[in-house]
Image (tube, rainbow, N blue to C red):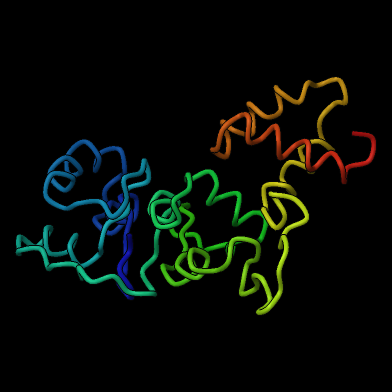
Length: 200
């Protein structure tokens, strides 16, 4: 998480500021930095709080990061997934399909504000914003169980791009691996998508 309004820096830019080639910096300086300054994300892309990095380089105690959640905090797909109760792949699929905002990119890492994730979490299942059963109405609110689910559109795109000879079970397994959920769930989504995809 990047706490709100906290400038960040990656290792390449730290090395650049020091005037040291990145490979040399990683051999000579990075081990000590990594031991004392925590990266903000559990990711192969190491991003640090800039004030903490500067304090470490100056030999000063590291300033504390805010420990109270704020709507403007920036979360990666794993942190967003934990709030939504889904997989990181589903978070990325939601953003691709418009079920979440596209997010912002910081040092090649895609991030979302805590506010956007909480709005998605608290919205009715069937719609991106608001919605649900109108007051006083009875009966089913969905035409099918996956109505409004952005994965249906992803399944439709997959069917359109795939060869007609490709078994749906193979497509479902690939989608499950890429975006989370079970193969069986993706088989159901593909079956629903096929109703709206010509030639399927």
